[in-house]
Length: 173
Image (cartoon, rainbow, N blue to C red; front, side):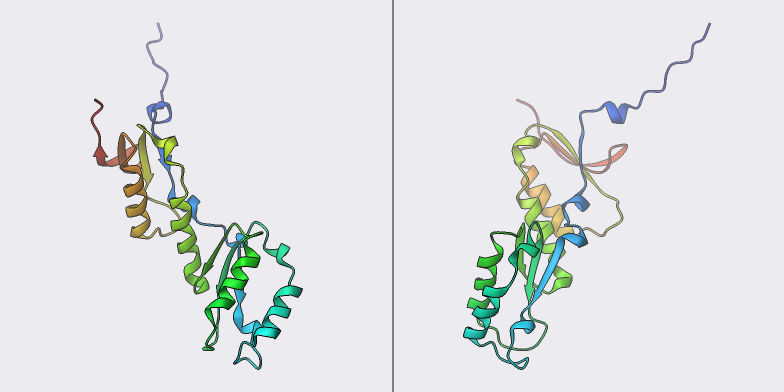
């Protein structure tokens, strides 16, 4: 008589929802950069008429479904309206737009993507925020997702589904 029981993956069968914050970063190929230095006269000065003409001639469709970063790699003084004009043109194409140094942009988009997360899907759910991965996640992202989920989730844990640290648990009334 065979008394062996089948191996059951209880983690896979549990009602836990695992969130991996790495997935909220845009992929590198989804990020495009606009450097305002390319619009400067002699690399020093932004002339309005020339700028507006260059904006009019630009093919904005190249930014369709992209995360776009607007910055200036020189020390030129750029009037605020120039950023606004570019943002206005990009808003019909880009997923999101930020003004930032390119090396900080993915972090800005990370926070914005977390903020857009539909919290209704997590109402009264047990959630694990994945702790390990290939990419460093800023502490601020964990703070942000915890702040958002603590209003709706039943419980929140940190780590991996097979080994978690409880963050909070609400009692069900």
